[in-house]
Amino acid sequence: MENLNIKNSVNIKVEEILEPLIELKKDYIFLFNIDNIFSNETGGKTRLNRDLFNLTHKKIEKNILIIKNILNQSINICFDEFKEILEKLELFDSLNLKTFFIDDKILLNDLTSHLVNNGVKQKEIENIINSLQNSIDLKNRLNNFLFYITLFDTSNFNKHIDKYSSEELINSSLIFDTINSYALLYEQLIRFETAIINFLENTFNNNKNLKHIENLFETLSKRADFYYYMDNRYKISLDYDLKIDYKKEINIPISWIENLIFNLIEQSILDTIKKDIKKGKTQKQISATVVLKKDTLNILVSNNGFEIGHIDDAFTLNSENVLIIESNNILNQFKNELKIESIESEGMRYSFSLPIN
Image 1 (spheres, helix red, strand yellow):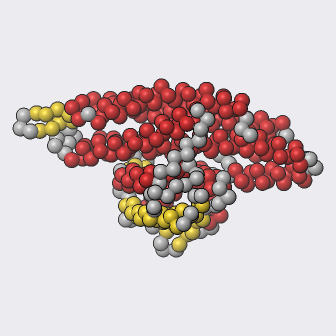
Image 2 (image 1 turned 45 degrees about the vertical axis):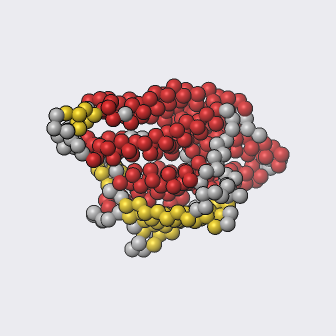
């Protein structure tokens, strides 16, 4: 049963998101109105009001940062609860944790074994593990919100526009393509708003619409095309094949599936960039296949990027493996695990199967 005290504390913090969220939506809508940021000049020229565009974008980025900080503070509330439980057992210091970045399954299994070996009664062990699980479950739900923020972040698009002069952007299709891309991001912003409201109202976002997967890939494809890493743009090809019956109902929140897909695409992007840095310029390719067969969703993401010598290294707790660990934490909730393959001279392959009913 969920610890209501910690949930209430987290709710109070998460409610702070609503105000910057309102401002964020206003600024997005402002950008959609062409009359707001474009001027028509003699000779049929359409010119971008760059100062106004940049000002609006700065406001968007400011509110995105505020929201991200609030979510991280909310996760810290869960971490403090988690820490307090372990400190009472005099076990926290031995874990050497600075943040709530853990492999949920391994930690709980190791802790259970430790308590059993030290003669703690079974009922007490169950109470301890359940209390820790409450904090972990909340942490995972809050982490599930963070991937939405990355999706509706406009910074990569804006960096690309900044590379062009005002004269180069006159009547340019680039700026209109960017505004259209903002529309995709805005859809993710609305999804995020719905998820936050459901969280505050204590109803899990049980959206069962598989169509969201197609919308997600469209957004991810745009993101891959305008990907910036260390201020360098990388143009990455993302091909996807979706074999899904969109009328099929599922019994798990679609946001978890989207989060998993996002993580594996993002990891694949980083894999291709690692190989680029290590071996020189290469054509960067990612392919994804999503197949719904009966009541099982099979997802495969492969890339021609970095190859890991020892697959176990991909599951090591370090900053390079955050996306892998968090994906496994999601899958562990459904008694599943992520499969990783390193194929020599080809690249990386990530896959999982998830029963949806």
